[in-house]
Structure formats: C-alpha cells, structure tokens
Length: 83
Image (tube, rainbow, N blue to C red; front, top):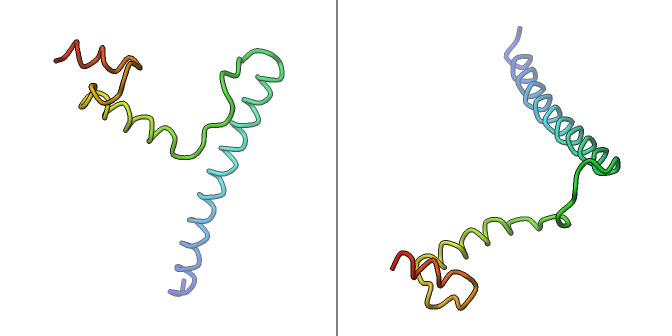
C-alpha cells in the first residue's frame, strides 16, 4: 500500500465510525418514538434545549454556595441544613 492509500483508508475508517454513530442514534430515537406511540412510555416534557442541563446544574451549585441569594425555591433549606 502506498502512503496515499493508507491516508485515504484512515479517513474512510473515521467517516465510517461517524456514520455508524449517527445510525445508532437514529435507531435509538426511532425505537423510543415507537414505544411512545404504543403507549408504553410516558413523555414528561418536550425536547430539552441544548445546554439547559448545564445551566440548571450551575444554578444548583450556586444555590448551594449562596442560598441567601436564591430565594424560597428550596435552596434556602439546603443552606439551612448545611449552614
């Protein structure tokens, strides 16, 4: 094999693994949607915006550090239990 052939083979292997991952994600999504359609799964909420889990986690950690600034959302009781 020539160097160009090896390089091209490596590129194709990388793309193949990327495409396999995409197919796996789509297959999982289709299976979940089929379960929802059959009524076996309950949907709690709509799609989660990108990054919202990260924002929620940072709000929780802020509430643990400074509960007096958060208000009465339950974070105050966290501060009272630990403070």
